[in-house]
Length: 308
Image (cartoon, rainbow, N blue to C red; front, side):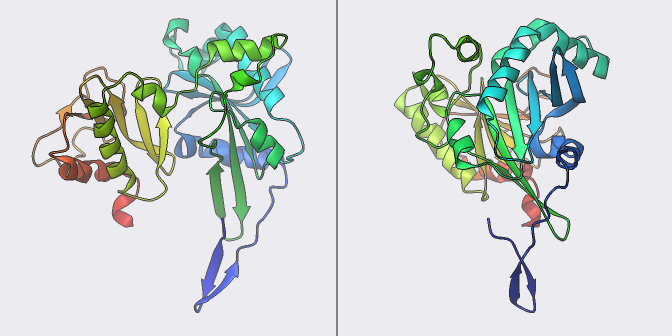
């Protein structure tokens, strides 16, 4: 990413300002955690057994715990540490639930947590190629996020994407590696193919049509396959979800009740109904007849869409 400032049509590169301390990077990320990741902060500097976790967070959408670690140096291995933290969460589930309940005054039960969606995020100003390749497995629940600071109070955030041809971690799994085996057996990282498997060609084509239409609404949209649905993300926020069903699609628009302008009344208010996707508006789609109009609804939920 190239960043410049402009002065009378002349461009000059912005100067990067390194974080002086790892704690400085942590403070910026934690202060803006929900805006950046849609995660909820549980505790900073959470200690369990002989481990000190920089940031303990919770994914309310996936109902899963997330560990976040910060690195100023890119010289250390992240895979070994990441797998150790994943196993820590699986081995000491009760301790994590107690911390959540004490923090929020709730009574979250073990069976309300989806432990298969547990993950670890490493945050650093930069990762080397060895670190990126070592985590480039489609089913490894370890994410790398690069965060840089520049003059003019500018921060860039870049989640490192796994390559489309990323292999399975199971290909490297050794019979003697008990920690890795437990992670592979208990934690599931979902892909689009998981949602398309076993579906008819008609439904697959319908999904591709709506997926392409959503991606064309705005640039820099990411796709986040989850357990039950596929999320579409802009600037860290899921603005729409699609659940691929046997004969149709369920589409959710991430706006609160009363915020959507739906002159045709195609959406259903699900604010008081249990549902998977984000937002209070749901549409069941069986064809592309209203595709253009539905996109006019979806774009109302895109962060800062009307400012672009």
